[in-house]
Image (cartoon, rainbow, N blue to C red; front, side, top):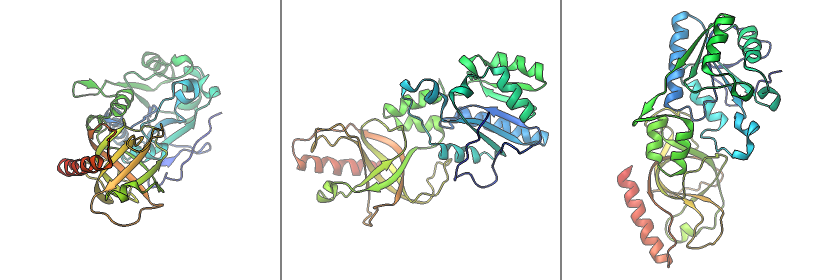
Length: 326
């Protein structure tokens, strides 16, 4: 039995489909949509355009948690987007309905035909299903795009496969973006995502070392799983951010800033990763506030300095370079 997952952030015109809700036959896309990158965006645009042409609803069918978290938890897959951000991103394409199915081992054990028959036909009576070129679903990923087309002929819906979307000569995929961010190339990640890569979290108490050196920092406690490679980055920072995720301009109260991600090797020998933000020309208290960090460009690796004076001189250079970048 499908369990529908709802989110407090799920507002505006897009609606969650309830178990008892009946909707008019629509145009549906099926997938995980982690990152809602340029490839996903092509699919969402096609689904919305097609639904408007036929005068029927557009539907996104996705899963929570990500299937790999259930079927292969040992892989420790860091997700590009949180569930709330994924919902907000999808909503910006004007999608009418979103299914966020609770993914369990029982759900994963369904044969693709069983899933299509029970969910897409008997429950939703879909007219068309759109998927990416490499999408697979159902038990042991037996639901290939070719099999989906066969099921479409059997059950009377059209199956459309969207070709791979390329940018910078490479196929845009969640795994490619994940690798790019883990390598610290946030500039390239932006070109694949269609927006700045960002993380968010609450400001917590730190050790006040930055303030003592003349560069006060805000320490971020984040729930984001995918953290860029250790180092120093030029960023935009939003204080108590306003949600507007698809834009080359950052919305809300925005400030140029420098972020250090790492273990503070000049002072400590531990392995704990800290995220410290120095907002330029900002002198208000941030404790307890929520910050959203939009990564623009990596400046350098994290370095262990022999003296605090050397560190201070480098921070000054970092701030100057970040200003020139932003």
